[in-house]
Length: 509
Image (cartoon, rainbow, N blue to C red):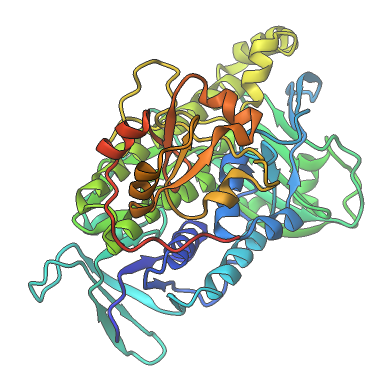
């Protein structure tokens, strides 16, 4: 067997996203999963505009548009289902170029990602296999990681020794155990919830956003996730189990506030989930990394669980590809945990706070919400904050320069504006670093930038891009669209970590 550069363990959304990005960069990648096909049960239902932008980089934006619907906003309800506040989304797109909130059925997204992954020649997929061991150092003394896997059907055993391993193997990650990492709680008492997915050909006539019942005893959430699919989530009481709600008759009292006629309802899934807030205490040993649920678990109150894993994949994959191709030194891989762990922690803690604000406090909390929430919607600043999908800037690392001012661009995403050619920034830049400049560089500097694989975009091609650049002479944008540094062209040529080596393959057109 030809040794791959990277082994990805787990072909869920995080693993397939990583494999696609690596494949697009020409990196030989082996993907291992216990299933041949996608897991058919619906799970995650929401992605924001930042993650939608990553999907476009993966080449699946059009497919995702066909299987998703923009979210209309958020409605907060009292325990008696009286509307306390409603936050409507009015902007069709953000600076990332996509809707702020997007509802979808996870198996459909996974199928689109699998299809894209199979289109890439550098990616090999092995389904129906069991990973039996992951080691940070191979037994042959090569210093490489080692992965053992077997085919349960034939009993055939394989050992591969790639340069890097991506552990995208979920909450019970074998890879996490292999690097000696443990999950640490972030101050959230685990909650048991009942998740109910229903299909019906009938339009139920409800407002098209997310309905959140703010009830300290029985919190609940409802949302439409497709043309015929609907999702309900109910907090389970002590002594209750998912087995108690396997029929429509048993579910009827819970569904009654939304619809009492369930004759045309088809139950797709009734499952119990325990919502947790946890973060791994380390994300890497040597060439072995953990991503997605293997590294962090979040309550669903802000809809960032699946998206956080795809962000992990986008952050790490381009760096590993650059190291494989020799355009970055191996030491830059320390930036993965330095950047992603604080970001994931911030979103998990935000989810905990939002969950407590909407469902905590007992009966006193319920009464307080009924008094306060009707006023919140009239506060413009807070209203915008509730709907804002922007996530925190990444912390400083070897691949994110120092922010001289609080509002400096380092660590933030460059806007995905439409340029003079009619194409968006991401489509022009492809899969490589880009320098946004006020004044085009001279011939000598342009030649040096080209040797480093750095594309150049003039800010004057877009009024929005020019306004974003402000008085800065230049901003260097990484392949994952995060700003690495701001300064002059000379600063970039002096401080940029890129090496003149093989240029990375472009992303999708």
